[in-house]
Each structure stands twice: as C-alpha cells, then as structure tokens.
Length: 268
Image (cartoon, rainbow, N blue to C red):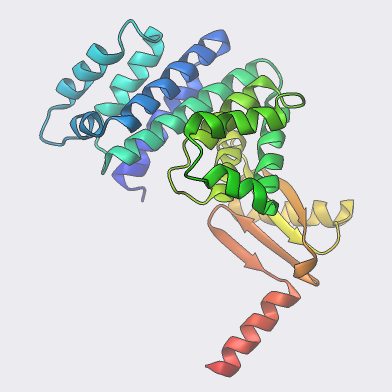
C-alpha cells in the first residue's frame, strides 16, 4: 500500500500531467520559480508544511505570495500541493520541482518531442556519471546556483531541445547535496513515467544485439507489468554478463557481481 506521502506525490504529478499545450510551459516555469523561492526561505518552507495550520491557511498563504506573479494555473497547482501533508519543507520543494518537470514533459509530448527530451536527459545523466570533472563542477560550493545552471546551458544548449535545457539547468542549480548522477536519472525516470513506462538501465561489457534486447525487454515487461525502455551503458568493469537496474531494483548478473558474492560467502 502506498504511504500517504507517496499518494500525495502521485496526485500532484497527475495534476501536472493534466496540463497541456502552451499552458504547460507557463505552469512549469511558475512552479519551478516558486520552488526556488520556497527553497531559499526557511521560514516560508516551515509555514507551508506546518501541520498545525489548516490546509486552507497554507493555500491562502501560497495565493498571497504567488498570485499575480506567476500563471493562475501554476498558483492553483501550488495551492493544492501545499494543502497536502508533507514531512518536511525539503520534501515539498522536491515535489514541486517534479511537478514542474512533468509539466514540461507534458509540453514536450504535446509538441511531439518527448522521446527526444527523455533520451537527452538520460544521456546527460550518463555523462555526469562518467565524468568526474563535470561532477566536481556541479557540486563545487564555490559556484552558485546560477553558475551551475550556466555550466549545463553552455554544454548542451547548442544541441539539446530547449525543454531539455530548461529541465537540466534547473536540476543543476538545485542539487542540494544529492548524488548528481542519480538526481539526473530520476528526472529521466519522470519523463519515462509520462508514457507510463519504466526505464531499465543496463551495464554491459559489450552492446547487446537486437535479439538479446528484445528478449530482455519481454522478460522485464512481464515482471513489471509495464512497457520497458532499455538504456545501455558500456562499462568494461562489468567483465561479462549484465547488470539491470529498474527503479530501486538491481539485478546483478555480471561476472564481477558473482565474484563479489563468492568473496562475501567465503569471508562469511
């Protein structure tokens, strides 16, 4: 059974998914801007998640703060979100960010570019995972949020879709100490979820052929009861076999993984 928090998160994301067309871009921009304000202001975060205040009071506060500053549809989504119960202000900010990203993915789907945006987000996540220098740039405390956002924009603005640039530059500016590669992967998962499908991240020593990809896709689809999109990462450290990660599940069928298990059993 889903926890109350998870259920609330799903409800907020459904609201973001329901926004379409040009309005989705307005909602995304407004919600992400509001998330930035709430993140900066500790007292505001506390007020908007204070369980001692009524849901109506929290919604009115959001209306007073953001009404007239961002689109009415964005304000409505924020009011609905803050009326729900959240365990912390940070959780509220993260949910609002996810809603902003999903609204942008809704716009991308409306424009027929969701597949491209989803793939670009995943490719960037993989780039971050494989590039220590980029990770250092994104986590360097000497760089402020604007500098980290510009770093991403300078890297991808010439080749990536503007929706991709908007999402990734916002993520880069708001890592908040979280593991960089996983945060970007989670955003790619939000894009995949827009199509009600899951992304399976594969680590392999050599690329799978088409028949192997088809068989693996069929097996994972049966296990998870959802369409599966395979994302393949070539990693010589795998040695042989394959590691599959779907959401929080990891299936380690690599030789390196089996060796680790064997060493653990011997040591135990």
